[in-house]
Length: 167
Ligand SMILES: NC(=O)c1ccc[n+]([C@@H]2O[C@H](COP(=O)([O-])OP(=O)(O)OC[C@H]3O[C@@H](n4cnc5c(N)ncnc54)[C@H](OP(=O)(O)O)[C@@H]3O)[C@@H](O)[C@H]2O)c1
Image (cartoon, rainbow, N blue to C red; front, top):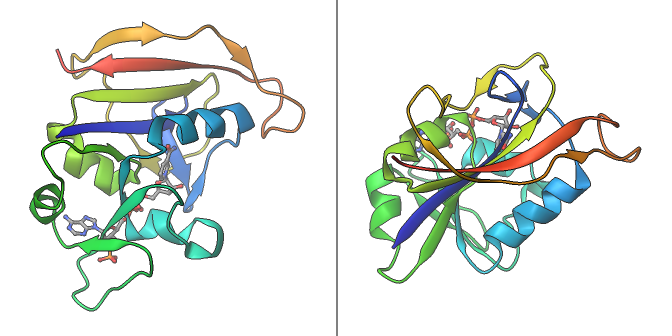
């Protein structure tokens, strides 16, 4: 079993504000799709509720974390603890943690690689990812720098993808 995470952060490792993402960059969403497609995604019930119609992601096995015993989601499985979620993942399965704040923190000890999209901006945020540089994670690779397009929010922002591995 391999556990990875994918996250998009601003310069202060902010990941969200008032339940919403900080930035919307189409090419980064493409990267999210390519990293997670065909794999198992692990997410919290609050992040699921931000998806279109609150629907799980297609072409992926969705494991949703909730403490509610009666919580059910069509086309997804529910786990009530990190241990339960981990027990549902098979030996040869690749899982990617996709948020939010509390679920990233819960699974960080189990992650071996984290794909971090870094937006070169600092925005008001109330949800954060742990600062991997301060935690001593190593940079495995770094993309070139991209510029967000006029269709993105915000436009004209520099961004890149940095892959970290546990040192
Ligand atoms: N930038 C990014 O890459 C990115 C990605 C995803 C999300 N986000 C942002 O992150 C923010 C949401 O984060 P969040 O922490 O509020 O919500 P979340 O992590 O998506 O979901 C929290 C929910 O997960 C369940 N949960 C948490 N800990 C649990 C545990 N130990 N065992 C079982 N269930 C547990 C609870 O569900 P119940 O209430 O059902 O019990 C809890 O309310 C939003 O702003 C979102 O936009 C950012």
